[in-house]
Image (cartoon, rainbow, N blue to C red; front, top):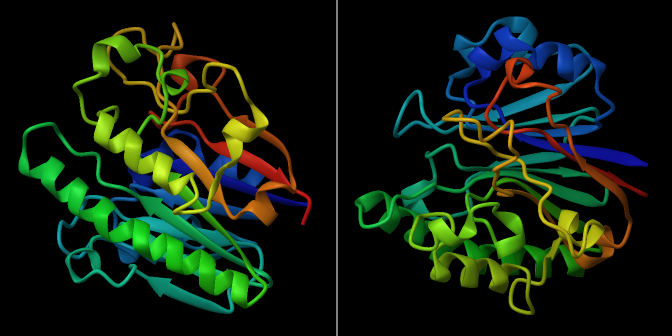
Length: 267
């Protein structure tokens, strides 16, 4: 078995002070994908930057320091690590990092959040336009080499009405726009060829949500979004045996506005 967790930490330095380090030490994961690290490696305490028992690699944002940033923590040392996906605009944006392990390429993704009617949304759309062809080519290269692919992270899009509690009031908001949802359907359709592992494990139900705004009582009422995905090639997706959201027991025990999304694969 191999256990993979993805979580947007909403600032790794802050999360480490609120329970992240204890969570990591106590958890069952073999691979952890982090997003929104918001720090250069030399800004992180050593115990956080290089936790015992892990190989940690980071891709901080060089274009907007203190923002974005992704990381991968693996129990086994990666055979190779690559930052970015070949698109110059996002090469140093701290948005994508992938590593090769035996038989598996695993990636941590932090897709731009966007904001309707602003340049941030234009950036998100440019990212999506460049990223889908890359995902398709990655799957094809992996298949030719007999490898599986797993792209985990904060995709910042709720795919369907089942993935967003208050979907009716968010139909014109970034993260649930028709064109964003259609793009994700392409990722999880014949073009991209990937499988939404958590949805496959939890069909026909709302959620399980992975992000709740800090405003109001969203966490207490479970008014959340499911925007953190495990996107796997079909062969790996078929080996997923269990998936769950590590939702905090109470609001004051949260160390991020996201909760870890964990899947166990029969590897």
